Length: 411
Ligand SMILES: *Cc1c(COP(=O)(O)O)cnc(C)c1O
Image (cartoon, rainbow, N blue to C red):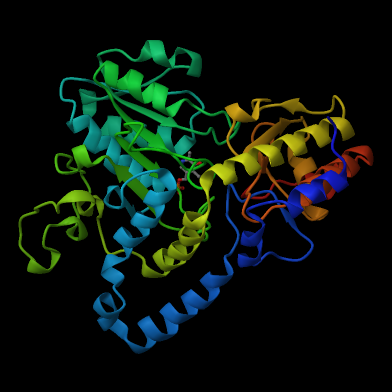
């Protein structure tokens, strides 16, 4: 049944997550539908960073490694993220970037499956996932090969040659959701390991990594976890693997006793060995604030609202712009992550015109308009208004203005 704006307001009034919105510094005059790419600033982060800079760094200097427990930050932030992804506190650690963590864990995983050559993924996976695997395959010579199979062929492509299945659970462009428990079980049935990229999942939908038997996972800190631009990423390794994996970036922070300064590398127990060099404390402190808010939220409520917001947006866009957009995401919200992806030949210019009108989404080549829904700080009323704005841009053909055709470096 078609909703009205009044219905949207009623949903906001009854929203169990409504209290979270005030914890974010939302700029006036902006409806932000890009929290899947860069999450917004939590109010607490401003004060926290000032404290870390002025007191911990400025006044206490090197003593803060102990007195402010800087050294414990990667594990502490990992424990918060563990709650969000359904893992035990000591199965997750925050470090490095998603790209670097993909390299570390994929290399570690293939070492656990000697005699198997294939890393299996899908065409159109996020570029860095594929590029890092190509780099790893090159480095290891003939030892491993990256093989790609379309998503409906993945189950068949899982054979006993496969060492590792590497997939992004929620596709960055289409929002299509993989069956993480099902594919993990299927991989295990042929003796393969799994590495899940959760960049568009963590903080967007409920996850149960431990229960679902996932072997390894990585994900982003700056998207739904609101850790700030270029925030550290996270890694997960199931406890059963932690003390047998050896990741190749064996830096001193992953040593069993970094301050013994011995010549020979000895990996730390547990997730500690996933660290490489000195952690970036400013980034981790900001991520701790963002992840702490997300860890408070009931992820089932987040998912329910995320689906409702996506459905509302789609319903309104189809009512206001009939036949004008293609649909790049699954129509059924149960089959997609927390985004709606439309297609249009003039997609880039349309997104630019919409941004000029205060509604921020983004564009992914060649023709995808991407709108992310972040239930902690978006209201149904905002989504209603965003669809209205898109309707105006289309009706008035505002996107045809020359200024909106010029591509910036970052889309
Ligand atoms: C955003 C994203 C990344 C980002 O990797 P970085 O190393 O942080 O640049 C990786 N994988 C997926 C699926 C993403 O969506």
